[in-house]
Length: 396
Image (tube, rainbow, N blue to C red; front, side):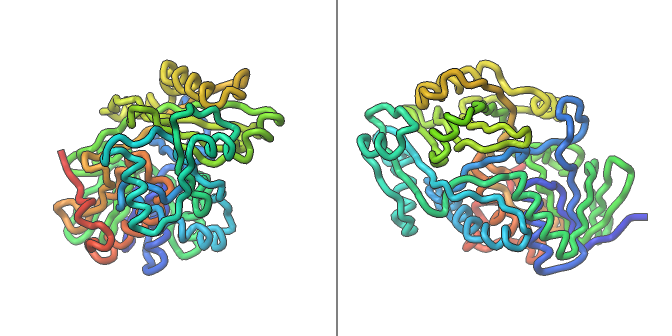
């Protein structure tokens, strides 16, 4: 016999956990179904998520008004989430963008500066001399300039944020179920959710927030139009001397002459193995993971060795004092939509909705995206104040 809920959120990652927390503010009868982080990635046969890490950049400076708004709304709530959960996940370290002078109105930094001006966001513009004196950890090329956001920016711990969201949701009555969903289908006035362990659940409405796994496991009647892209990150293990040197740096994003070849850099942080790492990643990889086996195999790997070497070389050019550090690499997966916006909307049915499509920038904004997912469940749609039409799901 099926267990009944009012709402079920499928996917225990950053968006799904946030959606469950927001739903639990306004309703009871909520379940959050998702598999937890595996103890051993290499032998894991279930699903994965991309929040298995200690740091993601957070900032409001953005070239897209939608993403800038979602970030600002989320950041405003960080303190409340930390207070209510008792779990700290946010560090205000500031965020620096560095890049060449924009050559056209289409360049990211020019568009971001325009959005900042329109929204009243205070960012400091730094020429090359000031860039070098303010941030001596870097050896930036002399033709670069910077934008620096010193407040309400820095980095979040995605693992800790998910724990915080789940803790509040559970305190407010949400049932958190560790399971893999294998099918979602409508049964009369209810939606039936089957899990791999043979348990069946039913709800009036279901929100699917399963990231790169959204098109697998019979969750949707038609696949969503998005690309699940492999990403590689590199970790530099720091000794105490380098920790002192780099410990005060901000979260940093560096553009080269080609916008698509930028890198992002996280300040040093202590990881669960008790070691301190500085993390760097990029977005040059353009492949697509098209099957469940592809995604699982990628998550079990250490990323792409060639990309890891490229990132390491880039890091040493920007931060020569990292020379000699031990490096390791890891995989990540980003979901890209053709609109460059997240998907938040219903299927042809009014009982099942999707919330996905982070486009490699959603971690900082996940609380607001969760709020929108919860609003979908409660009200059946999103208004234009919440960019509803810009997030209409597109199917293959």
